[in-house]
Length: 480
Image (tube, rainbow, N blue to C red):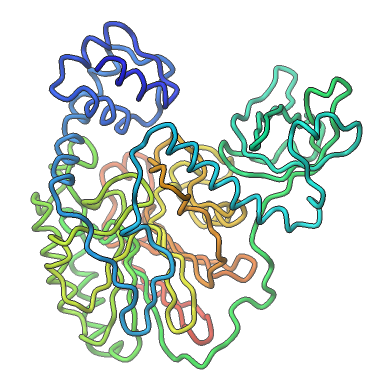
C-alpha cells in the first residue's frame, strides 16, 4: 500500500515525509485519502509533511465522503444525440475509459500532441519542421513542433523552455532582450518553434513562437435564415443560501410573458446546483443540504419554464459527477427527475443548433489561467477564453487546480472551431468577438459568496447573454 501511495504522489511530482507516510497508512483508505488531500490543496508542495496532511485532513475527509456518494450513483445516463434541432457533436459521455495509470497519461498527452501538431503543420511558418534530434544536428534555422515540459527563468533573465516531441527533447532559449521574452508559455501546451541551434547543438535559440490559434473568419458568423435565440444560464447554484430567488423569478416571469417567443433554447454550462463538500465549511452556506434535493429543486424550476423551450444542462465542479475533466454527464438517478425536454451533456460539449456550432465548457481551468498568465484575472475571464482558443486547448496545464482524466484521447483539444464559445465558473458576464468566434462568459444566479467577499471579487449575477442564431448579435439581459 505504501508503494501505491508513493506512486500516486510521484505522478504529481510530490515527495512524502516518513512521518506523513505513517499518518496516511493509518487511514481506512490510504489511496483515497491521498487523492482527496491533493485535490483540496491549491498548490502541491515538493515535500508533503505531516503538518500539511493534518491541515488538509478535514477537507480531504469531506471530499472522500462526496466521492463515495458519486461512486454509488448509477452510470451516466445514455447520451441522446439530439433533441429537436439540437445535435451533440462531441461529448465524453458514454466514451470514458481510463484507469489513470502511466500508460493512460502517455497515450493522453501523445493524442494532444498529435492533434495540435497536425494544426501547426498546416502553418506556412512551420513547413519542413523536423524531429528534435535531427533539428539539433542542423547548423541553420530549424522548425520544431513540441510540447512544453517546463518553463523557467535563468539567473541572467533569459527564459528557458524544456520541450519534447515524440523523438526527443531539448532546451529552447528565449533571450532576455528578445521581444518574445514577454510571451507567456504555459506547461503542457503544444507550440511551433522557429529558431537557430546553438554551436554545441544542445539547444535552440527561439526566433519565432507559433501557436495553432484559430483561423481569422473575417466577418465571423455568416447570417442565416434562423430566427431563433439561445440564452445562457451558467452557475445557477441551486441549494446555496445566496441563490437569487427574486432574480430567477424575474427571468421565469419574463419567459412566460414578454419573452415567450424570444428564447427557443437555454444552455446551462455547469454548476447547476451548489453541491455538497466542494469546499470546507460549505454546509454553512447551504439552504438545501441534500444534493439530491438540490437537483429536485432545479428540476421543478425548469418545469416552470414554457414547454417549448429546449434546455441543455452540463455539469461543473460543484455538480455530483466526477471532478476530473472531461466530465461525463449526470447519472440516470438525477436525470430521471427532469422533463424529457432537458438534454443532459458532458463537460465540455460541442453542439449544433440550427446550423450554428456551440462549444460549451464550464470553465474551471480559468483558475489555472489566472494563476499562470500575467494580465488575466477573475475580472477578465474572456481573456482566459481567448488564450484557450489561441492554444486550441481548454485546459492544457496539468497538475494545477483543474484535475484532468487521461482518456484515450484528449477531449479538451479544440479541434473544430465553433461559432460560439461559452463558459461560466467565475460568475462574470460579458462577451467579445475573437477572430470571428463569439466568446461569452455566462454570469451566475448566485450573489457574492463569503469567499468572493474575502477576496474583494464582485460577481455580475442574473445576466443572461442571448445570441440570435440568424444574425449572431448578442444581447445581455439583466434580471436584477
